[in-house]
Structure formats: C-alpha cells, structure tokens
Image (cartoon, chains in turn cyan, yellow):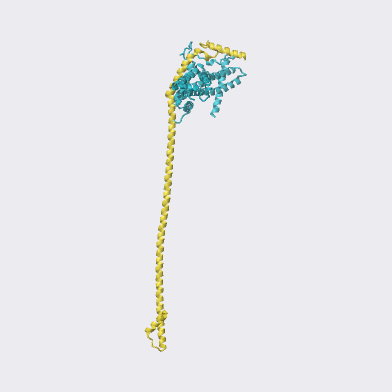
Length: 271
Length: 187
C-alpha cells in the first residue's frame, strides 16, 4: 500500500518538476535549450569572482546538507534511545545493522573496528546521492574529484594497512597458490594490474552512475519544451527518476561493500 | 540529429565559458581541474565532520540502544522461562498433593473396612457363642428329659414286674426286682 502511494507521489512529483522545467523554458521565449551538464558546475556561493580552495561553493552547501542529513538520521532520530523504536530511529538502526553486518560478513570479525570509517563513507555517499535527486540540487558524488578522493583514500588505507599488518606477506594477494605454478606469474601480473585499477573503477563507477542519470533527466527535461514530445518526455523523466532512486542506494552500497572486500585483502592476504 | 548534437556541445561550451575558471573544461565540468582544490578541501572537511559525529555520538549511541534492547529481550525471555518453571513446579506440587490425598483416602477406606470387619467378626463370634450356649442348654434339657423318661420307664417296669411276681404267687422282693429290671434294660 505505502509503496504504491509512494510511487504515485513520486510520479506526481516528477510531473510537477517536469512542468516547472517546461515553464522555465517557455519563459525563455520557446527556444530549445540544452544544458544537461550545467548542473555539475562548481560555483562560488556568495558571488565571489574567483573559486579558491577555501571559497564556500555549491559543493560546500550540498556537502553541508549531507552532514545535516546524517545528523538528522543518525543522531536526532536516536535521541530518545527508545527500546521500542520510532520510524526514524528504525531507519538509523537499520542503517547501522546493515553496514555493521556487511563489514562483519565481508571483512571478518577483525574488520569490525574499521566499521566507523566504512559507515562514514556509506552515509556520506548515500545522503549525497539522495540529496542530488532533489530538483535544482547539486550532486557532490557526481564529481570525479570527490569520488577519486574517496577511492584513493580507500586504496591508500588498504595498501598501507596491508603492509603494516602483514609486512611483505601482503604481497600474497598477488600470488595465487591454488593455481598451477606455471600460471602463477601470469596471474600475478593480472592481479597487480587489477589491484591498481581498483581505485579507478571504484571512483568512476560512482561518479559515472550519478552523472549519467542526472544528465539524461536534464536532456529529457529539455525535450519537454516541445509540446508534441512533452508527454513522452515527462513519462521518461518519471521512469528514470525511479531508476535513479534505486541507483542512488545501490551505488552507495556497492562502494561500501567493495571497500569491505578490499579491507578483507589487507586483513587476510592469504586467499 | 547531427545539428542537435552540435547544439548540445555548443550550449555546454557556452555555459562552461560562463562559469568561473572554466577555460580548461572540455564540456564536462567534472574535468575542470580548477575546481578540484575547492571540492577536495570541502570533501575532507565533510568526511572529518561526519566521521566525528558518527564515532563520537551516533554509532556508540545506536550500538548501546541495540545492546540494551538485546539485553531487555534476553531478560524478558529469562523471566518468562523462570515463570514457566515456577508454573511447572506448582503443577507438580498440586499433583503430589492430589496423589497424597488419594492415597490417604484409600488408607482411610481400608482402615474403615478393617474396623468394620473386626466389629463384624466380634459380632459373629458373640452370636456363635450365644448359639453354642443355647444349643448346650437345649442338649442338657433333652438329656434331663431323656433321663427322667428312663427313670419313669424303670419305675413303671419295677412296679409292673413286682405286680406280675405277686400275681404269680411269688414274694416280690423290691431290691432283686429292681436289679433284674435294670439288667434287662441294659441288655
């Protein structure tokens, strides 16, 4: 029941958003305007001319809103510490249990002490992804700069941790003992390459997913200015929006679970 | 279609040119490296803030809530099992009391039966004794009657014999007649 009404609400919301976009284009004098990538621009917030590293920008604003969302979901919602949880507290507990169990299952019992780091990554990505679905918003996780830093942080942490905990035994992850001796050098080469490709795929997967969906929605929104195509366009926006809701969660989950998998390599390099 | 694409590229190019420091961006704002320091700085700030919020407040709190709930559930289950054990115990006590009462009832019944049997035996014995006494009395009376009858018969026989002796002309000697009669009667 609730899922159905949520779906209806979402479709209505999407149609409203599309009409808003449509009206905006009409005001421009009816000319078709494509700016699917304009939403990804980083701009200073308070009309500053130059974007220095410390200038508050739209990235600052939406990252700040991510922090706010995390605080509301995990801190404010649990402030009553109820034995029988409210709905909001249930969400916080579900998120906690979900990531905790994932870390425990994938990285093992000794991976649990890295749970706060993985929870930080997951909560930042999931809130940023969902905030990015608001109309007129800016999606911080659609930026290569952001996802690359996240992925490099994971990559460097895992590599340093691996050598710190296992010494050169960490190199065992490249030397597959189950394989025949002849194949091992070839597999080792492949493993080394795949190990260094990890941060690239890790970051581009997230940024690419977020960027593609948002850009496609924008393109369809621009087509909505043409009266004949408008219904198709609006239906397409609704459909893609629903898909994006799914993608927002799945990408955050994928990022977190891959982090756990990499962490497992550092903790247990012997296959 | 080609013109559309051209338009898109052009539009993106114009919009990029409007953005500050976007000269290097080849259509994708994500690849505008002048924005990287800004994004990276604010990302690091954000991650540190979220990490501090999670590790200092949120995660310990949620962990303690979950542990507390687990504890409450465990306690409730333990209490329930305790109560169940008590109920079983009470049932055992009840059953034992029931069995005791039943055996006591059986004892009382057996005792009563034994008492009644004793009374009955006494009464029978008494009745038997009375009957035996009565029978002895009767036998005694019969013996007396028989003895007196024999005596009467002997007297009648003595008288008759002495009369017959007298009639036949003899002298009736009472003593010899009586001995003769008793000898006859015995024989």
